[in-house]
Amino acid sequence: MMRSGLSLRVMILAALTVPIIVQSPEIFTLSVPHGPIMTWSNSSVSLSCELSPLFNAEPLEVRWYRSGDFDKPALLYKDHKIQEAPVDPRYRGRVSLTGGLERGNVSLTLERVTLEDRGEYVCYVSSEQWYEKDIVLLTVNVTGSEPVLSVAEARGGGGQVNVTCSSEGWSPQPKLTWRNKEGTEIRNEQVLNTTDPQGLVSVNSWLLYSPSDSDWLSCTVSLSGERRESRVMPRAPIEEHWSLGAFMTLLFINLLVIFTLIGLFIWNKKTGFIRLSTSEKNDNAEGETESNERPAEGVKKTDMEKATQTEFFLKESATQTALRESFPKVDVTLDPLTAHSSQFVSCSKKMVHCKKERDQASTTHFVLSENKFSSGQIYWEVVVDSKCKQPWYVGVTTTDAAQINKAIVPLNPGNGFWVLRYKKGNGYCVSTDPPTQFSGNENLETLGVFLDCDRQILSFYDADSGVHLYSFADVSSCSNTFFAVFSPGFDQVPITIK
Image 1 (spheres, helix red, strand yellow):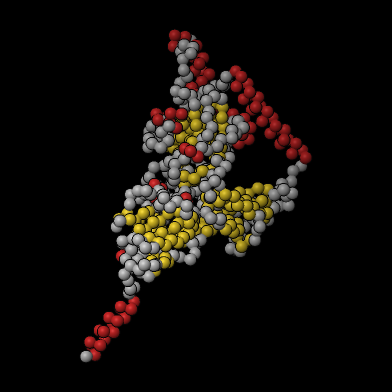
Image 2 (cartoon, one colour):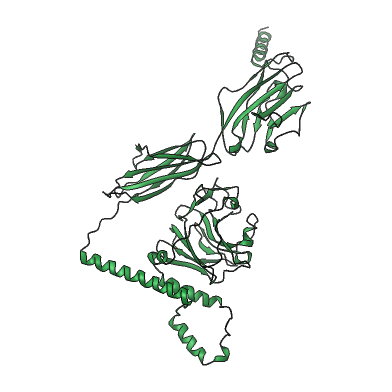
């Protein structure tokens, strides 16, 4: 008898905890969240909507649509099934009703959320006698890039430096925080936020700082628990005491070197004359005695001759100052239309990075320059920061190659690509067939690229030290038109055109 009473109590308790499903009433209401529903880009989200009182919604019409788009719904359930038309094509294959219609739950599940999905959604339910609708607000968060830090001498000196921090691609507006090495927050009001046409926010901040040798600063950009942080160890300008005589001597030597190099460059450009090494002069002298073996005029120079010319130029320009003085940088900008969907190009068209960290086994995509080069000598610099980045590559490609930007082809000269690659742990190589590996500075920060369209030579430098890395001696195309090509690799660390 006691066991029977206990079983009855359990059954009553279970009945009280299960929602009571009633027959379809003539009048009903909808229950939706009072505040906005937040989700992250590329995730899935459920927009909650339930009938009140609870009853079987399978015989009803359920329509989810954006405000003002009643006739173009994201999802339409009618006549006991989801209709193929009319629906907004942006949502096809990404929406479903997963709450359980038989239990009065008409919630919408949206997959692979994008920034464009944010906004108001209307839950509309109708029977033969009645209809109700209510609004659900969806907000979409997007995580931006790693902060980029830079240090410059402050105006007025005094041992202070101006430290700047910038990060792009956030939504909505993130919070930027400065901290010192003890983790103490440095209050700073110098913060500027800008929004691009896609609604993504760029945040920039700067502060004056008096560093010591052991001090470092961190800049953190955060949004709803997601954060990106970078650190920098600022250095005050080095104060050195020079005597007047030493200063004038150094100034005279520097000016003499600079004007000599400029004079050689102008003379070489006018005459096309390239000095040869001593061994080459001897070879030519011996060749004069064998006139029958001398190549006829007009014959195209060999790769070896071009490489020799390039080697001489590099010896003449083997300093940072000479390199940048001889060939002022061209203003190269990125073409966002050529970027892969996995890449983000900044508003300034000077920086590109992956939106999300990707598998290193997947294809490395690239973006091209807006600039076209067909004649003359062009020089530009790219901040690659090999200390932080995993893989990257930089170089040039032809007009024909630009047309296969989305294709998967080997990036070698046979397909119109001349690039220098770097992969952390594997070092440097160039896109010969097969690839040619060589040693280089593992902490390379700025890559210099020099393209001589007239002589068909492409050279790469460590722009900060002036050290030559590699040269292609026969860069040519049918149209003789080239684009700069950039790949930020698989990680989210950007590469930037200076």
